[in-house]
Every structure is written in C-alpha cells, then in structure tokens.
Length: 316
View 1: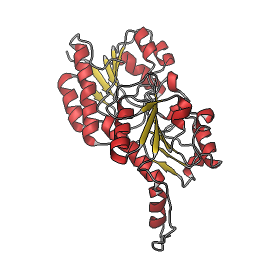
View 2: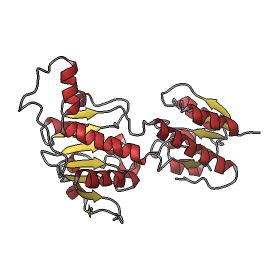
View 3: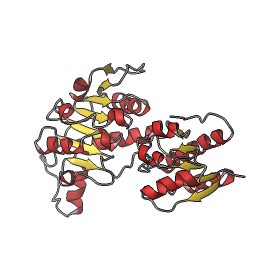
View 4: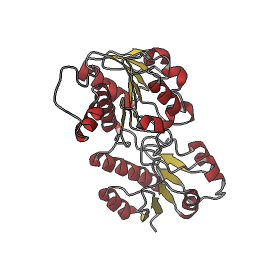
C-alpha cells in the first residue's frame, strides 16, 4: 500500500505527477496556509505531509495530536520557521527542507531589489503608467549608484554567498558580512560584527528564519545604517522588525528599502505601502518554474528516502 501524502498547496504538474507514482496523494487546491483544524487533522490522517510557507505546525499543534499518524513533514522551501522542528522530533516526526535549489533565483531577486530601489525603478514606472511623465530632464529621478559601492550581507550561507559573488564580480562592490562563523570564500570579503555590516551603502538580509533570528534587525541594528543606505530583505519577514524599519524610513534615517518578504505575510505594514522609496515584491524569490519543480522533486526525494528506511538527504 502506498503511503498517504497530503500536499498542502498547488505545485507544478510535473511534481504532482511524480508524487502520484509513489504515494496516495491528496492535493489541496487552496493557495492559503492550512487553517488550525486542518493542521491537526493532517497529522492524524496522513502518513506524510508536504507543507510549505505559512503552514504553521507549531508546538501547540503537535501537542494537540497525542499519537500522530504522520511520520515526516517534507517542507517545500529552504526556510522552515513555520514548523517547530523540536516539537516535531519529540513526536517522532522527521522534518526536511529543500536547500540549494532556491539559491540562484533568490540571489537574483536580491540584486533586482538593490537596482530597483537605488535607481528608483518602481517609482519611475508608477509615474509613467499614471501618465505623469513629461519627458527626460537632467535632474529627473536621480537615484543612487550600485557599482563600486559597499554591501553588508547579514548571513553568509548559500544564498548570501551567491549574492556576494554577484555584488563583487558583477558590480565591483566592497563586500563585508556578518555570520556566526567566518566562511572560506573565493572572492574578497571581510567578516565583521553586525554594526559594521550594517554600516554599508547596501545591507542585504540573508539569514535563515527561526527563533534565533526573530527581529535580529530592529531599531538598534538599523541605527548603524548610513543615511544614504538601502536596506534589502529576501530572507524571512520576521527577521526584521517591520515597524522599526518603517520608522527609520519615515525619519529619513535610511534612504530606501527593498522587500520580498514580510513580517506578517501577506499583510504589509501600511506605512510602507505609501513610501515611494520602498520597493515591494510579492515574495518572488523562488518564482521560477524550473526552481519550483526542483524544489518539489527535492521534497519528493526526501519522502522517498524516508519510506525506503533511509535518512532523507535534507533532514533539518
């Protein structure tokens, strides 16, 4: 008998077809996260669950299901801060994720946000679409340079390193970074503390989500940024105190921000919506078909290994 698998969100058809070959699949059609009752029912009714961002398998959820049927949560995504992995393990449930597949696509979005914010591309497009552009002039839409500037990268894992390579080799930027440990790199980059990493022309947040990084960037960290500095977040929304960021922007403490993730996603701090110096994207980091297919296949690889009695390749 095939293991019974719940897929909590629509996935690329190639992934669904591959899942059907190995599992008795139930495919949820809704694009919203699992509601509380369904989280608990999933643990009780399925052998495996393929969840993703927003499916909040918290300690309380696990506590409410004394003897779960589910033995593995094969998360679709590299970030798994929506899953209490410690509580899962206490119930004998394995948790896996999909690192690697997302690296280049997410790094590309970081560069997109840097360029859009520094060169006021989003603001310029809005002016044009609204019919408010009246032709070129020498002082129109003056932005900030990217090439040759400094960048502070907070978190130097796979994605942080991919961003740093693009910054160094593509734009000749001076790279500094804050990480729990120094990294062996094939390009020049200086390991510094958090305040010194924040003191750069661009600051890019690329840390993993979870309790260890919740509100890592708040008012104190933002106070170390330059008035001409641009803040970019492509990691997890709750790494940043969004209210503190909005206040720093409103005061002119920093020059601008580019965000692809939000603290209470999909809700966005209202003040940010009205700021022309803020670029807002709807969590596009991994939004490339080939990437989403690779993520899905990696999640299935984790599931296949588990039910063959092997350790999944990407246990967290």
